[in-house]
Length: 254
Picture 1 (cartoon, rainbow, N blue to C red):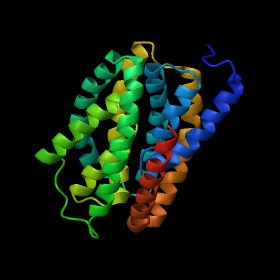
Picture 2: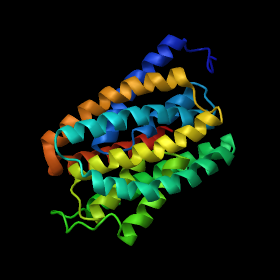
Picture 3: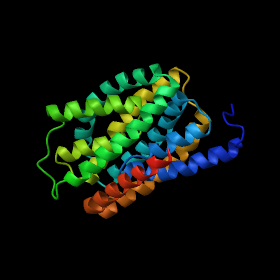
Picture 4: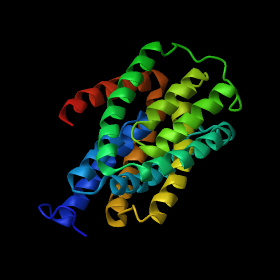
């Protein structure tokens, strides 16, 4: 179905694939790529719940590519990430239920508020970022469990900006940004996979548009992993800060 017949479907799919490359790279290096994709899907005429579900197809593809990339470069703490993902998946089940229950107009308003709040909070977190990693807390520490449960609720509900939240938690736990990004890839993929199943079961996924995003997000993630591993923590810290500021500026146009 063409949701916005002013734009030919082939052009729309091409635009989504290109946007997916950009969003995939941003999501792997920092976060906030969905702040680009969700408004674009809404612009093309998709209802909010359908846009929310469709965006997750690209996120799965991007995170799978990111996991493979970080593992190949030896920057992936699989055990820590798997343990942290359990409360995140539990929270996701609650978040996706809320997302499907919220009316279209309410979701748009919540998204706009979330964009502002997450962007400002992420910027403040970057200013508090320690110069050197702290002793790493175990993934079973109460603060990590609560933090990832909240991440799961937010990710199941909106998804956009969830990467910033994961990096804030992993940084507070004492992990550098390179390994924190690797943990982010697995935890976000698992909570997104759970929510995608629910959205798909409710008929809230546009597969042609989702696959176009998946193609772009995959290539964007490959680029993002290479940049993250080669440049290291200090460079990532600067990029995360710049990304947060850019997202904040773009908010004025939404």
